[in-house]
Image (cartoon, rainbow, N blue to C red):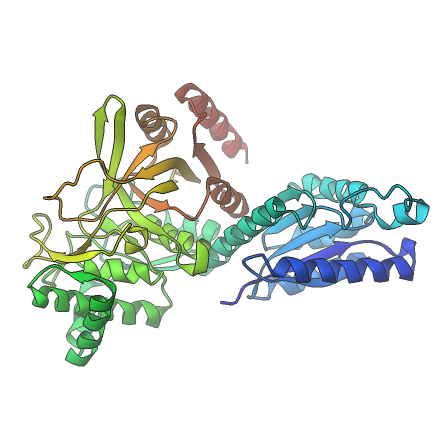
Length: 487
């Protein structure tokens, strides 16, 4: 989808045609210049002067699939009662850009004509009141529009808004059910579709096996060549690699036929299959699909959404699982991995295809998988959980490092990180908040963007960062419980 954002500028007829022409010209100029640096085009739509103009542009935005959100600014004073009908019906993300055309007050030029034209300082305050009065979710960004910090914040908000658009169209294909007796991978699919737009449904593993049996040798040959070009082959077991290619081709056909951008499976349900999809799932994630192990449909959808929010539609975001800790004082790290399925978008170098025994599940033969170390850098881990009656999004800041140990006998992809505010406090906070063992790890999406996304989706957001304490988080969660019950 070629997403765009609409620039709606507020004014009124009181100022006369000359001022309104200037406002429109400046708004068009600002939108054109900002579109050169923002991740998505900002399209100037209207200088709104009446209730009807505002209502009409909102109606148009609501039904335009390409419009991912509205950015509003009041160049002059724009009486906010004009905005009520439109804003009350807005169904797209909304950003209030509190800016002004000029950067400074011109000492010699400033007179009442200048003041009548350049009234953003109090025009934006009038506009801000009505959004607060309507209690609508919004992002407020203040500063001079050519400023790089303002542009970066606006661009980040756009990416979060695209995450909303992707969420509203999300379809998840579950191959079988989730792992037996696991609590956190369960959830209310009806509530999730109501709040987030996700359509989560199940396809039998037998349907996948039937599709696998229809895959041709020519199709497998072509995909194996892609594997060879993308990864180092570190196994002589080409049959295992070809079997993973067969699985990938079949899954992709089924996903695309149903319009699904995410999928899940479980090692407990491989009826008719020789191997749990490892390399197959990893390469699908590299193409932007979301994945969740053990039937975790929530993390699979979130993986796809964060990938869409990342740069180029396939940012460095991956399905992840907390596995084990290094608790040596002064060298405290988390080791994240999974049995097979970690996306190669987070790899520090060129991944290797290896084949090893997998001593869990219903595998008849040894699955092929990508093995690599994750790259260094600041990142987040994100978990969406069902609290019963509402959803909670938990986000923790982390710093990924080169693994401190080579771990030559660990035949899976792995990422090592330092958690904020520290390993032990971070673990206590994560567990206190109810965070799952499955997460999405992302180098490209920030905690602020996830907060914006949660705000747009009207769900609870919990952030664990460098200043978080267990006591403070417990108080926050208590107040959140009260607030969401009232809501």
